[in-house]
Length: 396
Ligand SMILES: *Cc1c(COP(=O)(O)O)cnc(C)c1O
Image (cartoon, rainbow, N blue to C red; front, top):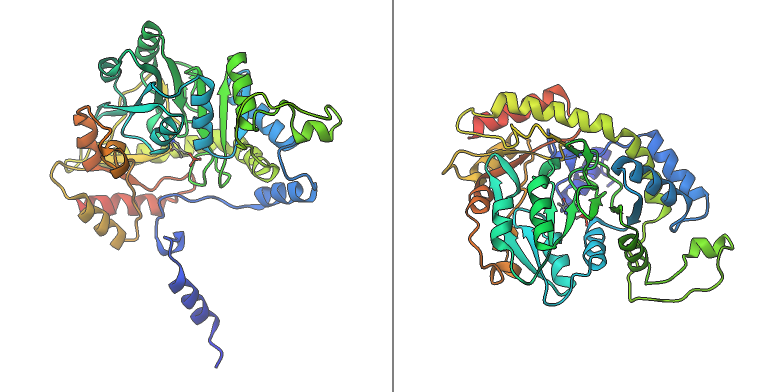
């Protein structure tokens, strides 16, 4: 007996293991698929050149304009970008890298994979989730080699203080700007604030292409290291050889294949053009959340006062009232169709890192227990925004 179409769809839905957006009234994040994206991808496919080529080169050029940097290297993921940055500044065995624990785990994993040790640092406070310059200073040791800062939620870190202490101790600053394409600090673009800036184009980021990343820098010597490590340490690329610019190559260091492909660059070029208006739309939604929730029913929102920062608004987070069980709030909001998340479970509490963590991180611990991430994407409707606010207020 053949089943009706709705019954077949229901059967398919039953076999899904992921949280598909369709099950939510308001999903946490969402990509907008339209004809411009489809056309760009189709053109890249039809071109017959699928690996790194002219679209990647154009995407790099445009992205360097956004960051106002001399060099830009498109890579396979944001994690690859962080790995390349650490290799380029020369982090290795015996080195310590200062890094906030309130962060995505890629930071600690990449530091570990170059043979260095992550030293977890605290953040400023419940009103500012970026890394604390005071705690960075306290964590510096004779082995400290670099600081990997992270522009939490699209807000630049306190770079004046961080630059000053990095200079005083001779440390390289790597800026994880995965949350912050299009953001600024005292007028300077995020990504350009340290020696090297790293971006991610994962599907839920402000500029999404599925998987992808970018490394940017002003420094010619660092750029050369990044270029080599990205592609096996080879002195020429397939694309150069295809164009007849080179016929052979040497291998001058032991690198990786962290290249981006043409299909993703084609999508990235479309997304990049839309980034400024989308960041603004994100900002308007965050302000509506703030007006309705900050200071209400024991809830607070960070980043009310960072006038020197133009935020990229990657995520919208609230801090729940002290003692309120977060799982209950999440479950109550999910029951109303509103998806939430956590940014982040602190890295120093994960099984793989617990034993490596020696420093007290009181602010991170407090935030880690109380932070909740609300849905945020540029095309949230008024009704969806209202549904999120209602769900929060009826669940705390
Ligand atoms: C997404 C993200 C990464 C990792 O990027 P991928 O592209 O997923 O590898 C690193 N750091 C931060 C802060 C991120 O948000």
